[in-house]
Image (cartoon, rainbow over all chains, first blue to last red):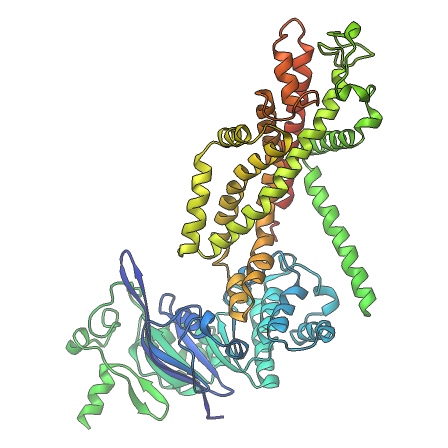
Length: 325
Length: 296
């Protein structure tokens, strides 16, 4: 359980644009353990998707390294060995554009089977049907359909089946439910959790939905402007948030009942918007919005400290305290 | 469900999608009209020796007593200066025009499409620069002028005319497919195929190409008309089908000298060209409607 399947070390991804260099991901380090669901949370523009795309090889990191089972994966897909492509799979956010409208669902699911020679030609049909049953779509009804004629949730199920087709061990879920109706979201999440158990999968679950994170993730990584602000086990994260940004996020979750309301940190009101990653403020990138801003915050960027076991935070409030003791 | 049943289900689905396509096509009555005209023209051209009243008039034939007759029941479109039936010659003329269109398109579309796919997929690399600059050079020269030069350089006959026009036609397709490919290659389904490890031919031909087919087929049906126009223009100045064989352009050119008194010699072959181009265009419109992306 505690074996680390993926380690990311000082990963940086900069994009050079006419307006300047976009620091989409700036020195990010974290690890994902075998069999867990690691949640990656942040506002839009915080670099979550860039991390996902770098891990699967759409981008080459500007600096830093990522290791998957000890193998260096900080390279683009064209330079990755086939075995790596089989092991690390991704489910994209928008199932509408991730399924080719001109191919049937059968053809879509066959591709990874053919490329990775998962089964013999004669067994392929059976495997496709098995995959569809796995995601609770009756194969007879869906096999020959075009993705154009099925609903968003069904499309995402097909995308999940495609991701699992070559028996991967690690799946990056890039906001798999954010493009879907609320009624379908729960179904997809339950399915993903069931599949994880059945096939001993490791997930990197990317989302901006904190309440969702609470239900699925065992560990949460909070990102702000390309950097990690806090890493904590899920329970710890919701009961004892440390970083002011985390508190702000948690207090912004809409609550249905008073009981829920009382559980949230109350004092923090969200203000301002995430600054542009082209023009990152000096010092701690959060200091413009931080309610507990100190003088040092606008000058020195804090470093990550481990406050409790497995609970890391990157904030001067805590680095100071540590220095004092 | 057994494999056979599944196969039959797939077959009936295929049939359903075909009839759906026809439904969309037929929503525009003009497209259906174009389709009917085109179908009859093609059928007439294929069966020309059997359905024309005077098949022997298609070649070297003279019948001076019946020369320059106006349209009548015996000669629908009248006769030319040596007494040949113009209706017969127009139908035979279609044979050359349609052959020209088919040959030119089947020679120029595949290479144009493939080059466009490659250039679009390798955008911002030397491959794209090489392919697209060569394409631009060809596009910069008016097709008629270059085809004219090539035909004159070689000897003027139907074969050389076909080669010359084909050589001029592919760049339009590489431009078209290039622009579609550059927008498709960032779609997530292409990304996914790349990340899965699919081969380049698979990505280009199976993932991207099917999504380019709608504009390509639409353009092909419109272009069939244009190719016929270019062919007729070359024939008009004597660089195409050589007499005594009946080229539509040649017939218009010969008849033009007799305007306006013996108007039928130029007007009917010209109308024949107009009708076939028009129907190709109508069919093109219908195809465009047919391929329009369905909203889910």
